[in-house]
Amino acid sequence: MAKKIVILNGSPRKNGNTSALVERFTQGAKSAGNTVTEFFLDRMEIHGCKGCFGGHSSRECPCVQKDDMAQIYPAVKECDVIVLATPLYYWNMSGQIRTAIDRLFALEEGDGNLLRGHDRACALLMAAEGNGFEDVLTYYEHLCGHLRWKNLGHVLAGGNGAVGDIAGKPELGQAYEFGRSIQ
Image 1 (cartoon, rainbow, N blue to C red):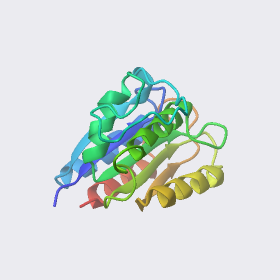
Image 2: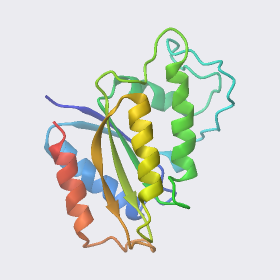
Image 3: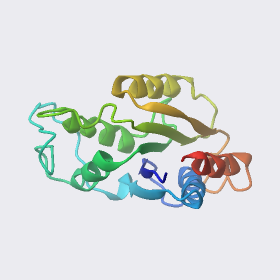
């Protein structure tokens, strides 16, 4: 059965190494009959969470802030798989993706928790100059556990500092096969 996949692309580079992973993953996922919606977060206006606890999951836009998260909320509510795609910045995910993840909290407030569980799964795609993924993997695993999302796994591509460094590397094929495996 086809899955609805949402990709939160936290890279600041539209044609960077993380985006290359996203492109190959998307090709694989679509070849398996899935639908894929990508949000390129760096080009969106998304403000940081205010911690106001004013959100309400049953509203069309569950957060009190009115910005481009209004495009992401409905897609996340309906999806089967959320893919977090990000470069590694200071042993963590980029600020772009962390901000969007924080703002997803509004889906946990109010009448019903529309974020946790719901047979949702999660995947991680990362590119980095180095190979120090341990800390971010700990965060990712805790996030999946807290949200009760099935952890489908990850593709981690180290050794990619400059734009285009990932070209021809095996991680691109791994991303394609990872996307294709989602059914």
